Image 1 (cartoon, rainbow, N blue to C red):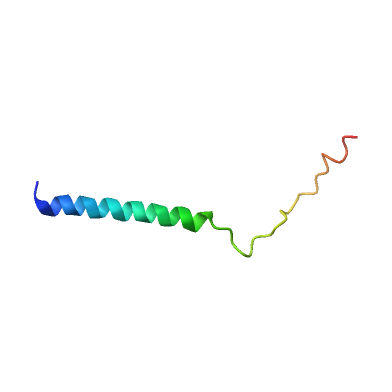
Image 2 (spheres, rainbow, N blue to C red):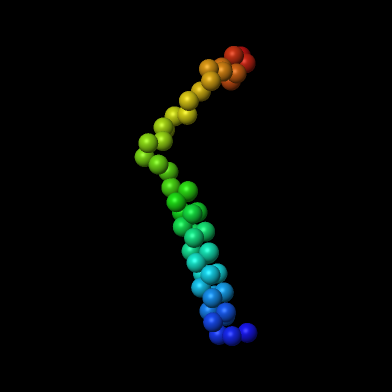
Length: 50
């Protein structure tokens, strides 16, 4: 196997790993426009058990 193909695979592998790491960090951050309280559907199941 020539030296070119070795470096081609190495660079391609590191580029893929860097892309996956970036994707994980980009999706793990909470956005500023997210609501702190989730919208509810009006169900009161926990309140009417008593």
